[in-house]
Image (spheres, rainbow, N blue to C red):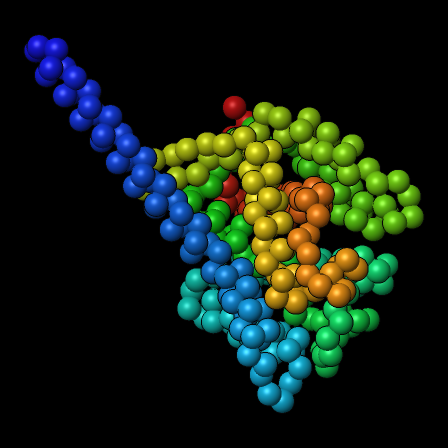
Amino acid sequence: MNVIDQCNSRQKTLNAQIARALKQLVRFGWEEALSCLFPIVVFASLAFTQLIPLPILPRYDWLLIIFLLMQWWMVRSGLETRDELKVITLFHLIGLTLEIFKVHMGSWSYPEEGYFKILGVPLYSGFMYASVASYLCQAWRRLNVDLVMWPPIWAVVPLAAAIYLNFFTHHYWIDVRWWLFGLVIIVFWQSWITYEVDGTRYRMPLVLSYLLIGFFIWIAENIATFFGAWQYPNQTYAWSPVHLGKVSSWVLLVIVSFLIVAMLKRVKGRFHYDRH
């Protein structure tokens, strides 16, 4: 084979690799989009009800009805299992509890009227947390997720509890989120997430996946506040971007969400508990 033939062969191989990589990227993006079906409905509903006011009921109550119907349809159609519905319901309660406390402390507010409110917090707000759980459950199943070098339960459960409690206690005591970040890195330093795209398995450091999901939720938070899902004090008179520092809060919340889903999957025997 002469030099020209060798160059042509290498170019064909390179082209094939690039085409394969692009195909995998598109496939991965499609699976991610399907996993985000519930969050997409949340954002579309926020935008629709902001731009086109609906009659009879306040906007917050229409959002609750839309999200309940969406949840019912996903289970009815088989897009979501009953076990996943239990996880999502748990996250709704966890999120609603956090919302009630944060609104009471003045961290943000829901200024619009609504019949279905608890202590100033509309019931639909819990679905925004539930949508994160829905994404995790959907992506876990669609991408055939496995966890490698998962830490022992005695490290995972107290860490998740400490992260969640810090959202409450930092109002009365020091904010230890950066200490918690350090513990997350230590506990999950050797942990990997593996996932499958079109028959090929890939892997990613688990801590990196936390950061990426938290960052994209921060972007989603900017969209949500733009459409009036809730309101920070600095957005009272005009919308402004959510401070970049909120990414840290979302990363920690994602970690709690991920740990709960992972532990429930482990109880159900639905992820490969690889310690090697």
